[in-house]
Length: 308
Ligand code: BYC
Image (cartoon, rainbow, N blue to C red; front, top):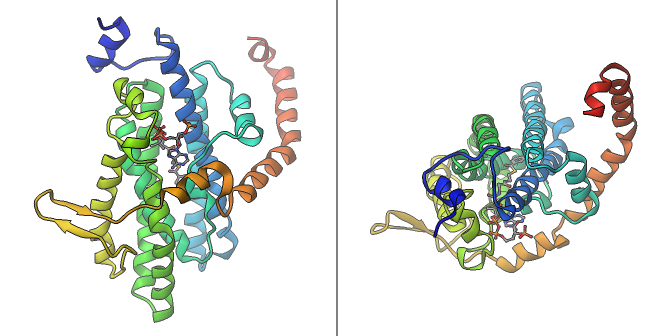
């Protein structure tokens, strides 16, 4: 017998914050949405690292705007997570001191300017594939946040691809720099979609409740199918000798992903995990006076907000 909640989900209804929902639905959303918000915030660091070294004023302004957009995405998603009855301070605490997860991709270093191009192209590209589906998920506040975020991610992807197209058509050194960045980021980008479906403990429950509408492997395949022709168009090679088009399925087949590396990175043993967390903790601790001043101001001018 289906519960009333399951009937609503199966009928494609959107669940809103004050609706009745099973505790597991609420918990799963808090887990996934908070990890997503953390990813946006930690995701500012690898690119933030290049703002002062952008090769022109135009590139610097665009990168600065992109990194600011990521901060905005984090804030929308923290706000939508708060509709589930958890505070942002609690979530931030889980990231900084409680071992909460954030996307594996941000635990790799950004070594050259070409990495800015590849992050926009691959990382924002992967995010669009994943989030276009989440924009149709069953929880209203998350779905609505995704609509705006996807619009901005599209712009990010285009700026990244344009950087790579420019480098690839440049001097031999510039082309080599673009190829090197593609070689380093391709496999970690495929890992962003999560473990294979057979090893994904959360997928069945998330799909039953239409939080996830496509599986990790389905979305990874879609990303590969979209990205191979884009690499060909800018004369770069994806670092996978097993990549080949299957005429029957009309999909690009790809080689074996190093899942040991993925599990190590999400356990905290990636090349940049410690540095990323330290940067976030330092920023949070240095910003304590700003939070305190804002709270004092609100107490003085809007006491009803503080007490409600
Ligand atoms: N990295 O059962 P599974 C961006 C964890 S930021 C780390 O398949 P699920 C951007 C998973 O959490 C975009 N951990 O999980 C920002 C689970 O652990 P727990 C970030 C991962 O939830 C700045 C365990 O592995 N996007 O675009 O069914 C600049 C088993 O996995 C990862 C989102 O967050 C990973 N890659 O599916 C530029 C999208 N993969 O919690 C760009 C929202 C898996 O059980 N999230 N794990 O301990 C999702 O769509 C899903 O949560 C995932 C994983 C597909 C990521």
